[in-house]
Length: 380
Ligand code: MLT
Image (cartoon, rainbow, N blue to C red):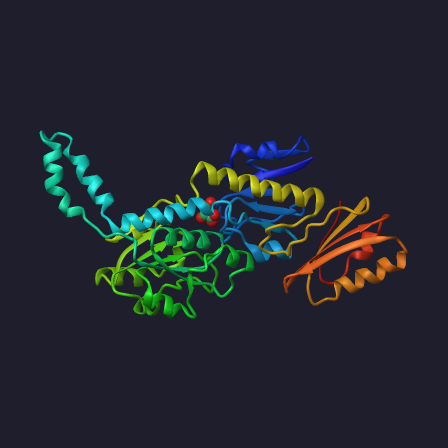
């Protein structure tokens, strides 16, 4: 029986994916796998049975990745599964920042006792005008699953689109319209954009990337959209820029005390992925990834270990997670060749961490697979 710990409420659709070998609970001291959304695992104590963590969502800044890697725990996320929901919220963000829809609806709702609502409305509506987004330029930082959808949507709305992402994958580049102009530098993007939308993960390199210096390069009156993570923006710098209207509006999907207290910051209560469709997609994708890893050792969409998906060729399968730089593969190969057993292997590494799936026509002595650099060995 596999014990799965739920650290957040997860859509019911996942239970159809697992059979009765799996038991789910909200409390479990030593689970085989964990499924979660944005629960903060910073202080989580990793126990010996834990094989994998499935994050139903894209951001993994709530998971202590280096500790998980060291313990041989594979962390999965669900890239793209909520991309459409976030894209639609970016559209909403552009509209509520360009036109005073929130101010207007708040005001009109105060008129319910008025005798002549249509007349008062027509007179008062002049206070809530705005601008159209067609013809404006949006700069999109980060062209992952979400950034690409936002870029293509913006083009279809009649906007000009500038993209920046030195790490864009081939797949995402193929999905991106060739009408998107790729900026050479962030400064180029900042200088030419009426809207700037952030779509990068939170890392030490991106924390407070939008700071006083970055803002100084932006157009006057820019609209900043942040559906990625609050910490990407230095709120003190944004506040100053909002006072001078260097930034016209800042739309952020992550409330903080500071942002709630600042005029012209439009705060959304982290609704980016809060649609029925996105929650279903993320939960089932995370569940399928966990199950395939637990039962077959296949890794797809891990943020710490390399991808390997291999059909079984022999009855016995050994899975080895390792650190690179210790000649682990050579050591294992020397042992296996000595056994004379027929085998078939697939391995890959991401520069720091590696993974080997070994299908073999007989049993191995797992103690002989153990060597310096090996993080975890599993026989399936
Ligand atoms: C994500 O990282 O996927 C989104 O912020 C939504 C969520 O946290 O579930």
